[in-house]
Length: 73
Image 1 (spheres, rainbow, N blue to C red):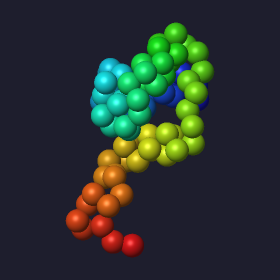
Image 2 (image 1 turned 90 degrees about the vertical axis):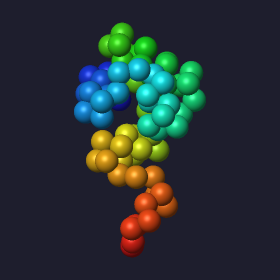
Image 3 (image 1 turned 120 degrees about the vertical axis):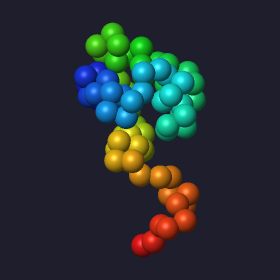
């Protein structure tokens, strides 16, 4: 993922620190720190498809699946 895309996502969801990435997505602290460091350097950020999907869900304000009592299919 382009570093600007990653930093834009952080801005959209109100994240400024690696610890907040850990809280929002649930990745390991070292992974979040490495991603943020890459983005801040302007490097490509290695993002797996599942992480990118989680980023989209967080940006859309969706709760974790099964964590919303009103959830229906």
